[in-house]
Length: 294
Ligand code: PLP
Image (tube, rainbow, N blue to C red; front, side):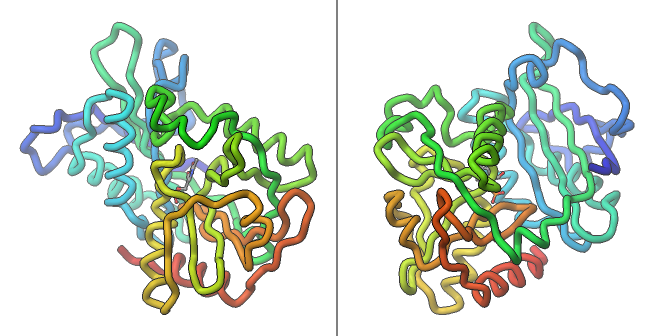
Protein backbone atom coordinates (compact mmCIF):
# COMPACT_ATOMS: atom_id res chain seq x y z
CA UNK A 1 0.00 0.00 0.00
CA UNK A 2 1.45 3.40 -0.94
CA UNK A 3 0.88 5.74 1.99
CA UNK A 4 0.67 9.38 0.95
CA UNK A 5 -0.06 11.39 4.06
CA UNK A 6 -0.81 11.14 7.78
CA UNK A 7 -2.19 13.68 10.22
CA UNK A 8 -2.38 13.42 14.01
CA UNK A 9 -5.35 15.20 15.59
CA UNK A 10 -5.73 16.48 19.11
CA UNK A 11 -9.43 15.58 19.41
CA UNK A 12 -11.58 18.66 20.03
CA UNK A 13 -14.44 18.47 22.51
CA UNK A 14 -17.94 18.32 21.09
CA UNK A 15 -18.65 21.89 22.25
CA UNK A 16 -15.58 23.46 20.61
CA UNK A 17 -16.92 26.42 18.57
CA UNK A 18 -13.89 26.80 16.28
CA UNK A 19 -14.41 26.51 12.56
CA UNK A 20 -10.71 26.08 11.69
CA UNK A 21 -8.91 23.23 13.44
CA UNK A 22 -5.54 23.42 11.70
CA UNK A 23 -3.75 24.17 14.98
CA UNK A 24 -4.96 20.80 16.30
CA UNK A 25 -3.33 18.90 13.41
CA UNK A 26 0.25 17.71 13.08
CA UNK A 27 1.40 16.20 9.82
CA UNK A 28 3.60 13.16 10.36
CA UNK A 29 5.54 10.87 8.07
CA UNK A 30 3.13 7.97 7.40
CA UNK A 31 6.05 5.53 7.25
CA UNK A 32 7.77 6.68 10.45
CA UNK A 33 6.79 5.50 13.94
CA UNK A 34 4.09 7.83 15.24
CA UNK A 35 2.28 6.05 18.08
CA UNK A 36 3.21 5.38 21.68
CA UNK A 37 3.82 1.69 22.40
CA UNK A 38 1.26 2.13 25.18
CA UNK A 39 -1.52 3.20 22.82
CA UNK A 40 -4.59 1.06 23.44
CA UNK A 41 -5.33 0.90 19.72
CA UNK A 42 -2.09 -1.04 19.32
CA UNK A 43 -2.34 -2.95 22.59
CA UNK A 44 -6.01 -3.98 22.59
CA UNK A 45 -7.61 -2.79 19.35
CA UNK A 46 -9.52 -0.43 21.65
CA UNK A 47 -10.76 2.24 19.30
CA UNK A 48 -12.95 2.87 16.29
CA UNK A 49 -12.28 3.66 12.65
CA UNK A 50 -13.68 4.42 9.22
CA UNK A 51 -12.38 3.83 5.69
CA UNK A 52 -13.61 6.33 3.11
CA UNK A 53 -13.25 5.77 -0.62
CA UNK A 54 -11.78 8.61 -2.67
CA UNK A 55 -12.43 8.69 -6.40
CA UNK A 56 -10.88 11.30 -8.65
CA UNK A 57 -10.21 13.61 -5.71
CA UNK A 58 -13.70 13.25 -4.15
CA UNK A 59 -14.23 11.56 -0.80
CA UNK A 60 -17.43 9.53 -0.93
CA UNK A 61 -20.23 9.67 1.68
CA UNK A 62 -18.18 11.68 4.20
CA UNK A 63 -21.22 12.59 6.30
CA UNK A 64 -22.39 8.98 6.54
CA UNK A 65 -18.89 7.88 7.58
CA UNK A 66 -18.60 10.63 10.19
CA UNK A 67 -22.05 9.74 11.54
CA UNK A 68 -20.99 6.08 11.85
CA UNK A 69 -17.72 7.10 13.54
CA UNK A 70 -19.80 9.03 16.08
CA UNK A 71 -22.11 6.05 16.57
CA UNK A 72 -19.17 3.67 17.05
CA UNK A 73 -17.54 6.08 19.52
CA UNK A 74 -20.79 6.28 21.48
CA UNK A 75 -21.14 2.48 21.66
CA UNK A 76 -17.52 2.26 22.87
CA UNK A 77 -17.98 5.12 25.35
CA UNK A 78 -15.30 7.20 23.68
CA UNK A 79 -15.57 11.01 23.56
CA UNK A 80 -17.72 12.05 20.60
CA UNK A 81 -15.68 13.10 17.55
CA UNK A 82 -16.08 16.78 16.60
CA UNK A 83 -17.59 16.54 13.13
CA UNK A 84 -16.16 19.79 11.72
CA UNK A 85 -12.66 18.91 12.95
CA UNK A 86 -12.72 15.45 11.34
CA UNK A 87 -14.23 16.83 8.16
CA UNK A 88 -11.38 19.32 7.86
CA UNK A 89 -8.83 16.55 8.46
CA UNK A 90 -10.49 14.47 5.71
CA UNK A 91 -10.30 17.45 3.32
CA UNK A 92 -6.57 17.89 4.01
CA UNK A 93 -5.96 14.17 3.48
CA UNK A 94 -7.95 14.06 0.24
CA UNK A 95 -5.89 16.94 -1.10
CA UNK A 96 -2.82 14.68 -0.77
CA UNK A 97 -4.37 11.66 -2.50
CA UNK A 98 -2.86 10.49 -5.77
CA UNK A 99 -5.11 10.72 -8.83
CA UNK A 100 -7.33 7.67 -9.28
CA UNK A 101 -8.72 5.75 -6.32
CA UNK A 102 -7.56 6.19 -2.75
CA UNK A 103 -8.63 5.38 0.79
CA UNK A 104 -8.80 7.77 3.71
CA UNK A 105 -8.75 6.15 7.15
CA UNK A 106 -10.02 7.85 10.29
CA UNK A 107 -8.89 6.32 13.56
CA UNK A 108 -9.96 7.24 17.08
CA UNK A 109 -8.17 5.29 19.81
CA UNK A 110 -8.82 5.30 23.54
CA UNK A 111 -5.25 6.58 23.79
CA UNK A 112 -2.37 5.64 26.02
CA UNK A 113 -3.33 3.68 29.13
CA UNK A 114 -3.66 6.14 32.03
CA UNK A 115 -2.76 8.89 29.56
CA UNK A 116 -4.37 12.20 28.81
CA UNK A 117 -7.20 11.09 26.53
CA UNK A 118 -7.88 9.66 23.08
CA UNK A 119 -5.43 9.69 20.24
CA UNK A 120 -6.64 10.23 16.71
CA UNK A 121 -5.22 10.23 13.24
CA UNK A 122 -6.18 10.34 9.58
CA UNK A 123 -4.24 8.79 6.70
CA UNK A 124 -4.54 8.58 2.95
CA UNK A 125 -3.12 5.80 0.79
CA UNK A 126 -3.58 4.54 -2.74
CA UNK A 127 -6.43 2.05 -3.05
CA UNK A 128 -5.80 -1.49 -4.29
CA UNK A 129 -7.01 -2.29 -7.80
CA UNK A 130 -10.46 -3.88 -7.41
CA UNK A 131 -11.39 -3.95 -11.11
CA UNK A 132 -11.39 -7.77 -11.22
CA UNK A 133 -13.55 -8.15 -8.10
CA UNK A 134 -16.01 -5.60 -9.51
CA UNK A 135 -16.36 -7.33 -12.87
CA UNK A 136 -15.53 -11.03 -12.34
CA UNK A 137 -16.89 -11.17 -8.80
CA UNK A 138 -15.98 -13.04 -5.64
CA UNK A 139 -16.64 -16.58 -4.42
CA UNK A 140 -17.72 -16.66 -0.79
CA UNK A 141 -17.72 -19.23 1.99
CA UNK A 142 -20.40 -18.92 4.67
CA UNK A 143 -18.90 -18.98 8.16
CA UNK A 144 -20.69 -19.27 11.50
CA UNK A 145 -20.21 -16.02 13.43
CA UNK A 146 -20.88 -17.95 16.63
CA UNK A 147 -23.93 -16.10 17.88
CA UNK A 148 -27.70 -16.37 17.34
CA UNK A 149 -29.93 -13.63 15.91
CA UNK A 150 -31.05 -12.43 19.36
CA UNK A 151 -27.54 -11.81 20.71
CA UNK A 152 -27.03 -8.19 19.52
CA UNK A 153 -29.98 -7.06 21.69
CA UNK A 154 -29.06 -9.33 24.63
CA UNK A 155 -25.33 -8.53 24.75
CA UNK A 156 -24.63 -4.91 23.74
CA UNK A 157 -21.11 -5.16 25.25
CA UNK A 158 -20.16 -7.24 22.22
CA UNK A 159 -20.26 -3.90 20.33
CA UNK A 160 -21.71 -5.64 17.28
CA UNK A 161 -22.86 -2.44 15.59
CA UNK A 162 -19.58 -0.56 16.15
CA UNK A 163 -16.72 -0.38 13.67
CA UNK A 164 -14.01 -1.12 16.19
CA UNK A 165 -10.33 -1.63 15.50
CA UNK A 166 -10.63 -5.26 16.66
CA UNK A 167 -10.66 -6.85 13.19
CA UNK A 168 -8.56 -9.93 14.03
CA UNK A 169 -11.67 -12.15 13.82
CA UNK A 170 -12.65 -10.61 10.48
CA UNK A 171 -9.17 -11.23 9.05
CA UNK A 172 -9.17 -14.81 10.38
CA UNK A 173 -12.50 -15.40 8.60
CA UNK A 174 -11.04 -14.25 5.28
CA UNK A 175 -8.09 -16.64 5.76
CA UNK A 176 -10.52 -19.49 6.52
CA UNK A 177 -12.59 -18.63 3.43
CA UNK A 178 -9.42 -18.81 1.32
CA UNK A 179 -8.51 -22.18 2.82
CA UNK A 180 -11.96 -23.32 1.64
CA UNK A 181 -11.19 -22.20 -1.91
CA UNK A 182 -13.23 -18.97 -1.78
CA UNK A 183 -12.16 -15.33 -2.04
CA UNK A 184 -14.13 -13.91 0.87
CA UNK A 185 -16.41 -14.89 3.74
CA UNK A 186 -20.03 -14.24 4.60
CA UNK A 187 -20.77 -14.43 8.31
CA UNK A 188 -23.99 -16.19 9.30
CA UNK A 189 -25.71 -16.50 12.67
CA UNK A 190 -25.73 -19.84 14.47
CA UNK A 191 -29.48 -20.01 13.66
CA UNK A 192 -28.81 -19.64 9.96
CA UNK A 193 -29.22 -15.99 8.92
CA UNK A 194 -26.89 -13.93 6.76
CA UNK A 195 -25.03 -11.14 8.58
CA UNK A 196 -22.27 -9.44 6.56
CA UNK A 197 -18.85 -10.10 5.09
CA UNK A 198 -15.74 -9.33 7.20
CA UNK A 199 -15.30 -6.00 5.39
CA UNK A 200 -18.52 -5.55 3.40
CA UNK A 201 -22.32 -5.60 3.51
CA UNK A 202 -24.35 -8.30 1.78
CA UNK A 203 -27.24 -7.46 -0.57
CA UNK A 204 -29.34 -10.05 -2.42
CA UNK A 205 -31.85 -9.55 -5.22
CA UNK A 206 -35.20 -11.31 -4.90
CA UNK A 207 -37.16 -10.47 -8.03
CA UNK A 208 -37.40 -6.68 -8.19
CA UNK A 209 -36.41 -6.21 -4.52
CA UNK A 210 -32.90 -5.70 -3.21
CA UNK A 211 -32.64 -6.98 0.37
CA UNK A 212 -30.05 -6.57 3.11
CA UNK A 213 -30.20 -7.61 6.79
CA UNK A 214 -31.49 -5.15 9.41
CA UNK A 215 -28.65 -2.95 10.70
CA UNK A 216 -29.62 -3.94 14.27
CA UNK A 217 -28.95 -7.58 13.45
CA UNK A 218 -25.36 -7.42 14.70
CA UNK A 219 -23.77 -5.85 11.63
CA UNK A 220 -22.45 -2.48 10.52
CA UNK A 221 -24.87 -0.32 8.60
CA UNK A 222 -22.92 0.03 5.37
CA UNK A 223 -22.56 3.49 3.87
CA UNK A 224 -22.25 1.95 0.38
CA UNK A 225 -25.40 -0.15 0.84
CA UNK A 226 -27.35 2.91 2.03
CA UNK A 227 -26.20 5.02 -0.88
CA UNK A 228 -26.91 2.23 -3.34
CA UNK A 229 -30.42 1.63 -2.00
CA UNK A 230 -31.25 5.27 -2.81
CA UNK A 231 -29.94 4.81 -6.36
CA UNK A 232 -31.75 1.48 -6.82
CA UNK A 233 -35.10 2.96 -5.75
CA UNK A 234 -34.58 5.72 -8.30
CA UNK A 235 -34.15 3.00 -10.93
CA UNK A 236 -37.61 1.60 -10.12
CA UNK A 237 -36.62 -1.33 -7.88
CA UNK A 238 -37.73 -1.90 -4.28
CA UNK A 239 -35.41 -2.17 -1.32
CA UNK A 240 -35.93 -3.87 2.04
CA UNK A 241 -34.20 -4.57 5.35
CA UNK A 242 -35.18 -8.15 6.20
CA UNK A 243 -33.70 -11.29 7.70
CA UNK A 244 -32.02 -13.36 4.97
CA UNK A 245 -31.92 -17.10 5.68
CA UNK A 246 -28.72 -18.65 4.30
CA UNK A 247 -30.88 -20.71 1.90
CA UNK A 248 -32.09 -17.42 0.35
CA UNK A 249 -28.50 -16.35 -0.33
CA UNK A 250 -27.85 -19.64 -2.11
CA UNK A 251 -31.10 -19.26 -4.12
CA UNK A 252 -30.76 -15.51 -4.84
CA UNK A 253 -31.16 -14.25 -8.38
CA UNK A 254 -28.03 -12.21 -7.72
CA UNK A 255 -26.06 -11.02 -4.69
CA UNK A 256 -23.26 -8.57 -3.98
CA UNK A 257 -20.72 -7.59 -1.36
CA UNK A 258 -20.73 -3.82 -0.97
CA UNK A 259 -18.04 -1.66 0.61
CA UNK A 260 -16.58 1.81 0.35
CA UNK A 261 -13.37 1.02 -1.52
CA UNK A 262 -14.02 -2.25 -3.39
CA UNK A 263 -17.58 -1.02 -4.19
CA UNK A 264 -19.98 -3.65 -5.62
CA UNK A 265 -18.44 -7.11 -5.97
CA UNK A 266 -20.93 -9.66 -7.37
CA UNK A 267 -21.03 -12.98 -5.53
CA UNK A 268 -20.43 -15.72 -8.09
CA UNK A 269 -20.41 -18.76 -5.79
CA UNK A 270 -21.55 -19.66 -2.28
CA UNK A 271 -19.72 -22.57 -0.62
CA UNK A 272 -18.63 -23.86 -4.03
CA UNK A 273 -22.11 -23.66 -5.57
CA UNK A 274 -22.39 -21.18 -8.48
CA UNK A 275 -24.63 -18.14 -8.12
CA UNK A 276 -25.93 -16.31 -11.16
CA UNK A 277 -24.14 -13.06 -11.86
CA UNK A 278 -26.18 -10.21 -13.29
CA UNK A 279 -23.43 -8.50 -15.28
CA UNK A 280 -25.63 -5.63 -16.51
CA UNK A 281 -26.91 -4.64 -13.05
CA UNK A 282 -23.46 -5.00 -11.48
CA UNK A 283 -22.02 -2.67 -14.05
CA UNK A 284 -24.81 -0.11 -13.42
CA UNK A 285 -24.22 -0.31 -9.67
CA UNK A 286 -20.48 0.27 -10.03
CA UNK A 287 -20.97 3.05 -12.59
CA UNK A 288 -23.19 4.79 -10.04
CA UNK A 289 -20.76 4.21 -7.15
CA UNK A 290 -17.81 5.45 -9.20
CA UNK A 291 -19.63 8.57 -10.33
CA UNK A 292 -20.78 9.89 -6.92
CA UNK A 293 -19.67 13.42 -6.20
CA UNK A 294 -21.13 14.06 -2.75
N1 PLP B 1 -19.43 -4.58 7.35
C1 PLP B 1 -18.17 -4.59 7.81
C2 PLP B 1 -17.80 -5.54 8.90
C3 PLP B 1 -17.21 -3.70 7.29
O1 PLP B 1 -15.96 -3.71 7.76
C4 PLP B 1 -17.60 -2.83 6.24
C5 PLP B 1 -16.63 -1.88 5.66
O2 PLP B 1 -15.54 -1.75 6.05
C6 PLP B 1 -18.90 -2.87 5.77
C7 PLP B 1 -19.80 -3.75 6.36
C8 PLP B 1 -19.34 -1.97 4.65
O3 PLP B 1 -19.39 -0.64 5.06
P1 PLP B 1 -19.15 0.57 4.06
O4 PLP B 1 -20.05 0.37 2.91
O5 PLP B 1 -19.50 1.76 4.85
O6 PLP B 1 -17.70 0.52 3.65
